[in-house]
Image (cartoon, rainbow, N blue to C red; front, side, top):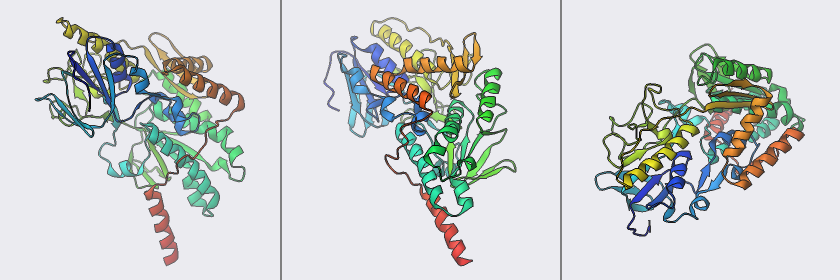
Length: 440
């Protein structure tokens, strides 16, 4: 990897998300060599991915170059690499660009989509965990309306304009709200010769409430907001299968849709070498102790979504959200400095600052440590927190200008099909139905 030798101990961090980047920044300019590895050369602000997928923001406004963050830090290096295996006996990392030894290893690979073993869902549904995936979804959404204009088949047109979102967590709720907004204020202007009223937005939740990690008050208010915006909500319904057009559930409910968006689950993005059955949880998260050290692996740590630190308050590990990741990154950086100085580490104690979700224009729900509120003020609080959390002045300015413009004009300016996206499953269904029609 062409990393220079150093008299300082080498700390390798795998993953440039909230956890890994926070750790690398806090260890910068210390008496240690920091090597950050990631499959992408940028950090993604994932809470705003849904706005990229619905045309509200361009991807570069929620991404920031990792090299730019580390360039002013002594003894800090970044390599664009996909890590395939960790040899903990020899302390060697194997990747697509070569091998690298380490003195301390921090795994911050985050999470990936969990389909719970449903291969059809994995093959045919759309997901939104990365910027390329968000761009694929944006292209597909817009292409659906272009195709709906061309087809004379009413059933096919309805399937193209019927969107099914599986998962009633923050991502599903925010995406459903964004789709409802463009349906009500944007698409009728873009497609005056298409009956946008036939567009359907269906949000399916397997549990009995939306935003189940938040308060009952926030859940009820978010559901009320979405229904008022025209979103159809189905609770206590589990999607069993999806073949690219037909959605089947555990009830009599079924849908005809060429676009199913899966936001119903995540799991840890584990790496070979740290994947023994006694180390991983059922959701592929790595078991760590109170210091974020991987159980049974000295000098190997895991932080963020990939880490499962069980406590009395969090028997299944901390929430797979930004705040636990950031706090663990900061705390572990202090503990590593203590280790380098020969001192004992201190246990991690998570402080829950609360959670929030936006449903649409002037609509949000906020659960802070002791305060809960919804509506317009909650929406402004949500915007301020997210703007402040973005990395880089330019990103904050671009996002702020976009939001102000969209608010004033009731419009989103980046409804662009930059790279066309066509799914094979939809094409196969269309060809099959055409063959049946010819046979008849």
